[in-house]
Image (cartoon, rainbow, N blue to C red; front, side, top):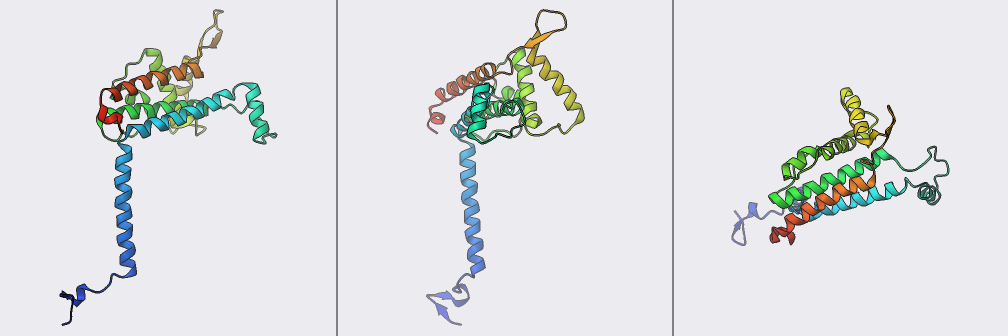
Length: 219
């Protein structure tokens, strides 16, 4: 039996091409997993994505102005647009809701030093991180949760019963009595100023969490 550098010749046979590929794939997979686990535990990334979604929401809200909408139509070559404006409220609400979701998950990560929980239920997420909200804010978050789950993406929810329930909730949040019997006006709750005030409230809680833990703030 031939020895190669003191080792059994059977151990010195070069790794096959497939073996090298498998080894490289395992190493890459381990590296991806390590990077994934590291990033998901860094609140900064969740907060920055929250800010990005907030900016997208502001751009869409700005298009609710007719002049801005007309400018978008002109710049993007949408002369054949069949709707009066490029502003789409369901998508706007979805973006606002997602921005809040990532903001609260940033708080969760900063508090717990672990990856955030799965799911889009804003009320449950707010409860997890201990953020206090008023009754009107609870109703607003419920509407935004629906926008995240389906209204901003699909024509109908998964369950038929959720359609009527959501419409009822949305009208209750969006409308208030106007004074004359049986008439209503926009409450402003689903408009940008109200929604951004909710985001800024969450931002204050996030920054407060960072200040209370210097180790987290440096991440």
